[in-house]
Length: 372
Image (cartoon, rainbow, N blue to C red):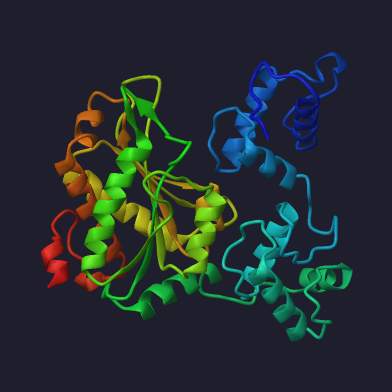
């Protein structure tokens, strides 16, 4: 769909206003304004985006529209089942996944997409509780879910699984499977400023990181080539298909004000679900890069962006400075800076797998020490 923003009119705006009104975010009673994307609609969209941990820009693009449409569904409104060609999405799916997670079934995460892992978890639940194991969430299954309490104790089931997966994989990077995602590409250059495009810079950074990881025996995949691009859904599908251990998505930022500068890292996190290992890796990436490069610390943040939400494994997106900043730009254009950033990213990945007793202070571990 075409993005909708303030000033837009038409039937698509009518639908957006209706959905916002259903959620209690907009008074949609004036028929003279029913097709107007005005200031009130923009504020309502921003409120919704902030609540859903997606980019807060007041614009209804594909991601925001999908989230709005999904928010109209409550668990029990419809029959839920896996459809490989057109998987069901929505808040009702998220609610089902959250209940299965709390009961100890391996859904991976509550991402709001009724995929194969959700169908398998639902069938396991149905078998365990004497129901027909058809993978359909209808009245009988809902009744059983509502009668049961939480079965897993001692922490979040998702957190426990992620922690065990990291622990059993061991501290050595040899044999680990890492997907590196240079953002944008192809027809989408990302941020552009004074003849330099984000896609070019992050491709170079990704290539430097890939070389270092490969030298340590890490199996690596790049989500795109130097001249092409992919959708976030396709990038997530690649990571899931190769059964990656982690995904690292590389970006640089831009803003109208040249005063915006610094680094920030993002992991999958919403009010109802989050990746704790992803949060840990995001924090390690932030700390290593800030210590090694001197970039301003923009902290870490939970987001529900498609790539973070749709990957089965911990995924982190890092914005390595602002191309529009007079402070960050000279650093980003310096190959030595990109070498330093690649080393910091490698060290952050290694530290994720080290036991607490073996984890060195931030900014001191060197690639030669890892290789040794």
